[in-house]
Length: 544
Image (cartoon, rainbow, N blue to C red; front, side):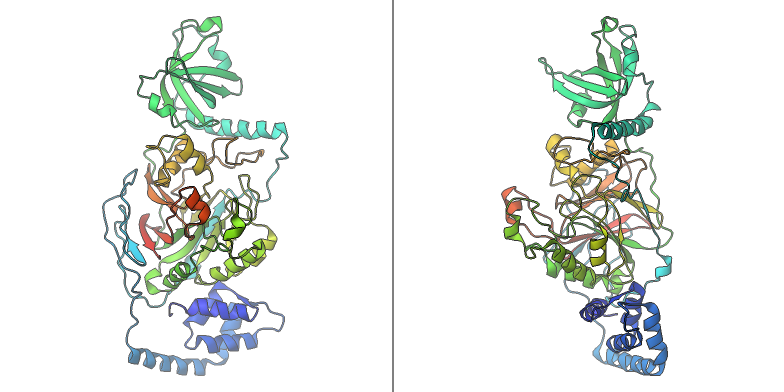
């Protein structure tokens, strides 16, 4: 189908007050006379219908099959006379390179205009080809959502709720660590003889330096608190800089000689994190199929890049994007209202519901045969405290054009057997602020995501900038190792592999705002990472 056909059909239907099934849009776009077929389908639809169904379209095609065949022949003759359609001149293809390293430091090559760049790890990536019509068998698509906490919020803000969530976090993460060490509860350590070897699994309750420059870490378990000393000249001293309050770790070492006197301390020899196993082997899809991973669209902002978005959605309609059957959006669909100081001066749409209505219109440009999954972010109209439940029914109704799968932040989405952990990423600000530059920076946001995988928790630290809701269960623990970790929020692009987990921060679709300029944020805009689910190879496309 022509690049704009599906988008034009969806817009035309919307102007007449209709939504449409994805398959119905695909049938119309593939018809010989899409506009005429749409009009005939609307004539066959009941007067009270608000959504054009596959049956309505098929009825129109069957009732006028002779005319359709004739129109198809005319269209073929016209196409032959006009010659082949030129590829989009703003899209080109990069080159394939070696396997992506654990920490990818090379910036994907970019040129002026919309480009295609293949980063390290893009083995087998396809070159740009014809931009004809898509041909998708939607019956093969498969999406399963796990970890959606929408409707499961139980916290009331009472003290007991906080105890419950931290106890649940400790129990689940400590299970991942106890098999590696000979763990002893904190209250049992005080009865052990000085000089004994010992190990603790605990939650970091305090970190401070001593007068001599050593590091004193207090670890808390369900029985008490125990002090652990990391000497400044030990190799593991560098790991202390990576620690965040409230994360769960294990340490091994030797008890001080005065341990039995009640003033004991554990001299630390090694530090263990819950971690991703280095031997982890990710799952892949059984067929050639891809997913586009994007975030931070920010419709409603004066800086929303509408033209770049349209170039992206037009490309999705082409034969070159034939394999891209999934669109995963990791939060901040709209700019929101009152999120940061003087935001109202930078808004193009001032009403939050109107922002979602406009976003829904842009979403209609996406091919109707794509499965769309979205989670909320901190600019969206849901609670700020994480985990964030999915959009409420009123917002879901506004964004009903694509029958999107809407789930909580975070959630795990299984796409044809590939598990994608989707998290908007507010805690990345804290990780970057609290850890050394060599560990995490805004210029390399994927490295901050590595820290979350290492800690097996998407927002370990409580009481900082990241708002956390007390629940009976800690929904932010990473129980199962994902195949892909997708986040956004920081408006910077980064990618790499951490113990074979493909890690992507997908940038944004909003040019630099005055507020971002004031805090020295230079956003990476209009990038669309495309993941081949059958190989987990990555291609980066830029549309600005």
